[in-house]
Structures are given as structure tokens and as C-alpha cells.
Image (tube, rainbow, N blue to C red; front, top):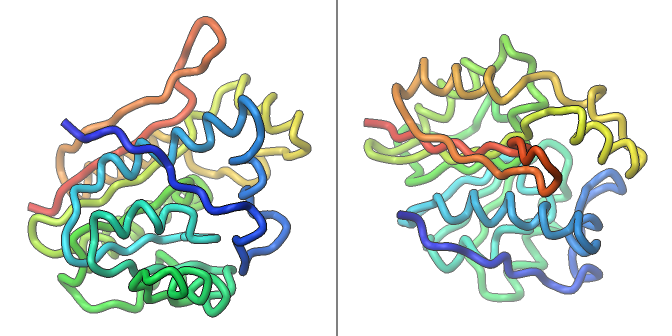
Length: 216
């Protein structure tokens, strides 16, 4: 069973290299911040450790402090983050980070390179027809026996309402459901396992899903 993890956060002012749309501020909010942190913590808990991890969509590098406790090297791929600023903030703390600009659909890495590929709130932004391509690319860069760990929202009316209260129309940004993602993962990797984070408000339905699949 995966060990529980508590997300190690830097002071908010020390995160750099992302635009104003990045959700980093939400992690420090009361109540909502707890559930933002919980989704990252659950994903990190599923990461089994090893030599190298690739985080796709690393943003500010929010998970890097925790990942450095499990992996020798942290590699990152992100479409929009300023890789130099994010890398500098973590290299100064002694972390081995290797960051690149790029897309999960065209990953610039050789075969069999990583022990783990991690994607937290990334895959829902792809179209359903792109999910298979994404997972085939992930499978290619994983070592035999390696794992992919991902987290995606379970879109419900409650979640859409919460985002609207924060000034975001989430339906303009999320194109794939948790079902689209898990079905694509199963087609490429075979069986895996899924865990849900439940809503704090009755009837306590799932609001976030974490998937864990292995390359056999």
C-alpha cells in the first residue's frame, strides 16, 4: 500500500516561471487549498521511486521537493512554463532537475528512460481522440516495469460550481472525462488501478481520480 505523503510547499513568493493562469495560488487558500494539495499528495503517494521520474506539465515544480525524496533525477516537460526560472529555483536547493519545453503528444525522450511518468491534472486538457497517442508515448519512454501515475478531475456539477466561484469556466478547458482517460490507459497498458477523492459535501461523490498503470 502506498505511504501517505504531505505536500512540501515553498513560500508562495518563491515559485516562479509560470503565467497568471497557473493555479499555484489555490494551494494556499483555506478549504479549497486542502483539496488541491490532496490530489497532488495522492499522486505522489502512488509513485514508487527509482532513478528517474518524468513529470509532464510540472508548472512551478510544485511536486519536486517530494519527488526528490523518491528519485535521483527529476525530469520535466511543460508547454508553457519558463524552464530556466523553474529549474533555477530548484537547482539552488540541491535538486537534480532536467526540464524541457514540450508536449506529451511528442515527447523528446528515448525509449525505456523513466521509472515513472507523472501527470497531475494534464490529460483532461487533451481531446478524447488524443488519449491513446499520449499513453503510447508514455509507454515508449517508460522502462519495463515502469509506472504511469496520473490524476484527473471527475467532472460533476459541484466541481463546475466551485470553479465558477473562482472565476473559471472549467468546461472551456477540460475536454476529456476521467472515463476517456482510464479507457485509453487500459487499452495501452492493460489493467491498472484507480483511486478517488470524494467530495466533502453530501452525497460525497468522487471529484478527482488517480490512475496507476504499469508497463509489463
